[in-house]
Length: 224
Image 1: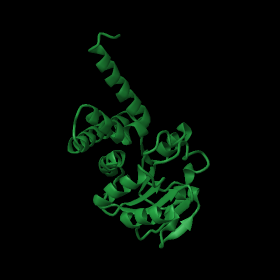
Image 2: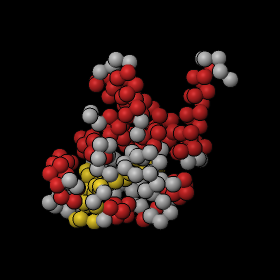
Image 3: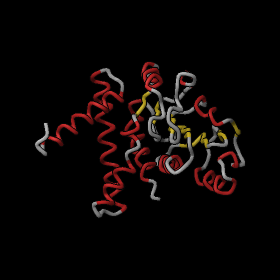
Image 4: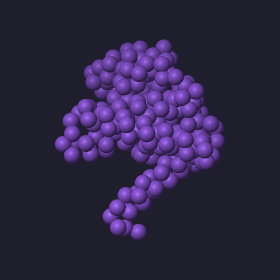
């Protein structure tokens, strides 16, 4: 309801953008899956100065390089049932969103939507994985080879899980947003630093970091 996952994606973008020599101010954003995650990510990124240029859902893609006001797109989708109900822009097929010109791409709906057949068409500099497993392993490797930064799902889209943890412990909405920001920013920076220093893909860096933290936590329980 509060858009925790989308907020986390926007915080992740703010850390990841400089690594791609990007500024969020004016950055062009494309979102695959303008739903519970995607629309909130678009809203929070717009607040940071980015501009939405494309969004998709099951019925197609709407594209306008001049920018799409997020509130207007939300209203159009609520009224028509799809982003293609937005009055302006170009209407395209659902899968066409991956080949559009943008700075930041957020796959926020389907697994394996980035694969060997479309990975070469992607023009974004930064990909934030809003959905779970939105790219095949082969596609992630190819993106890395092409110099496109991809922040793994369990780093970028952890906002909802963090929010649930805060709620479980009796925290309020403000505390949830604070925890999401602190944790996702820290985790994103650690993954980027390790990836750069060790010359490894961000997902491998994230898995290594997660493994180290799990082992550290287990040490307090007397586990080996």
